[in-house]
Image (cartoon, rainbow, N blue to C red; front, side, top):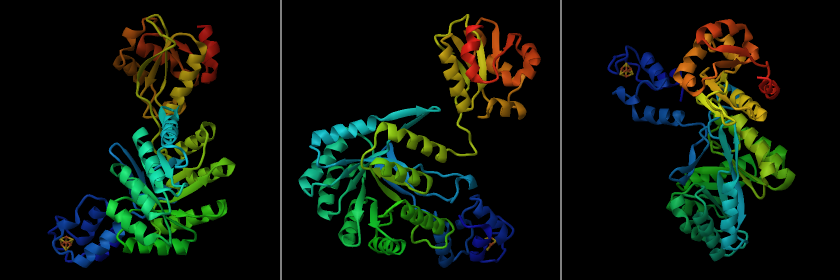
Amino acid sequence: MPTAIEIFKHLPKKNCGKCNYPTCLAFAMQLANSKAKLDDCPFVSEQARAALAASSAPPIRLVRFGSGARVIELGDETELYRHEKRFFHPTAFTVVVPDSLAPSEAGRRAKEIAAVRFERVGQALSFDAVCIRDVSGDAARFASAAEAVGSSVDLPLVLSSGSPERMRQAAMKVIQRRPLLHGANAQNLVPMAALAKELSCPLALMQNGLGEMADLVAQARAAGVEDLVMDFRTSGLKDQLESSTVARKHSVKKTYRGLGYPILVEAGKGEDGILRGMLAVMKYGGLVLFEEISEAQALPLFVLRQNIYTDPQVPIQVKPGMYPVNGAKEDSPILFTTNFSLTYFTVLADIEKSKAPAWLLVVDSEGLSVMTAFSAGKLTPEIVAKALESSGAREKSRSGILVMPGMVSRMSGKLQEATGLKVIVGPKESSGLPKFMKGL
Ligand code: SF4
């Protein structure tokens, strides 16, 4: 969205008030904050409308592929650095299934890819899409592989082929899934762009060099395809970093709009593939294609992605409430902690390790950790007492024992008064819980 001053430049400057704001500048400020509509001014020229539409377009185009509930969104990023605001669309991880496999094998491989799943701080980590690659050069084989994969998994699909004809045959088998077509280059751009336009599918362009990619983007747009993804055919990590950074920087700073599209990275396989995948997550890759990747190799990449794409201003939280651990019963004690996800899962794991039945009361601290919440007045004896009432804790546990985190022991007296329970100060670090629970 352009700034108020940029918008103001395009307004008629009559200061007539017909937009319900006293001056054009006041109206521009409301527009910049999305609190007014351009249509509210009856005097805006078509030329001004077009200029404002162009400058309010996202710096990196939002490109979608997939269908129904399984749609991947790429691009629409507005920042160069995560700390400036946040990144919006996590890098999508895709694993390649070659059409050299028999259709049944291709389907089985796709199922294996879809089944990979880890859970970390309450979030599921998994692959996002499957890429069917034309390595056989046989149209019927490529189409059969696409069909087999499409009928085996509901993940979004990427079709990778340099042949417009083979791409057409495969795409027709899974067209209802709106696949991403990967394989347009300087030689086949005209038929590939025509196919993408006809099928309303996004198109990935393969080209090395920033200038050359900009030319290819311009040609694809001239052919009527706007949903584009850029695959810089880079020679190594340095080249990958440079292409991605220059494209992102010029797009976000709006110094050049011709490369404002999501970036696809062909990671390949092995150690080099993992490094390329890591770099793509850190530096502006929208989609990564892995030729091969094991679960052990994928996990650190999933975690890296999760960390980079978490909104730094919104801590990951768990739902407040009372949770049984190790088969807690009526006579089991209550321990409490905050709803900051990392704190909750650490405490939970340490109670589980003790094997002692207990109730874990999760207090709503707006996602802050114990010490931060205490310092900010979000973890007080009154708040804990309220959480005990709202979670029905007193009905679930009749032990009369409340174990508090040792870090905030200074509120133990007031906590006992506020809750009427016997308050026991637990260890300062949750790693001390297994030993502490044994002596409770
Ligand atoms: Fe300015 Fe248009 Fe509002 Fe009149 S209606 S004050 S010209 S923005």
